[in-house]
Length: 180
Image (cartoon, rainbow, N blue to C red; front, side, top):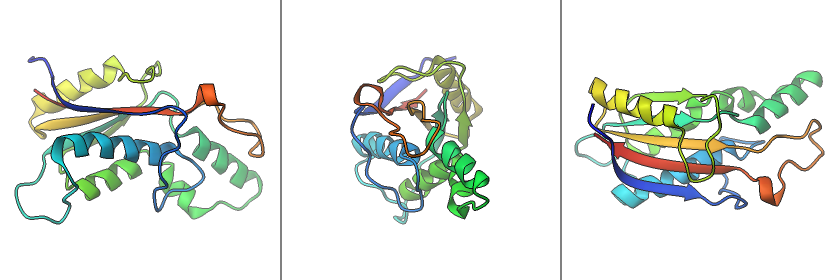
């Protein structure tokens, strides 16, 4: 197979909170994914164009996270023990929900995939498993580009009242837009 060609990259700086994302609460995981995707796609495409005419952007979305959305998982556990589950948490517990948001915002029409690699990627890196899958998605022919996003949150406290993040252990995300 052909090697991948990088069109754009972006990193969300560890320690910096991402901007809020309407429709997502109790966690900065989904806002983190959306923020780094916006940085990368803006670098390559310019501004979002979900409603503009023209050829659709055949761009697949691939989210890789070894830990997933730890804060939402904790919020769901807490809600279940109190017998009141906020309905929004169920929606946002699906990692494809934020990818659908990104696809709609940017007018992307490729496949949407979320994976959990065995090992978390270091800040500024994307897991090798994700890049291998990006190669397969491009070879399949359903997309011309793949936006690969790696996002990790720190371990969450056992109790929701405890602080979740320490400055040296903040969440991080990297996005890479690739083509064959």
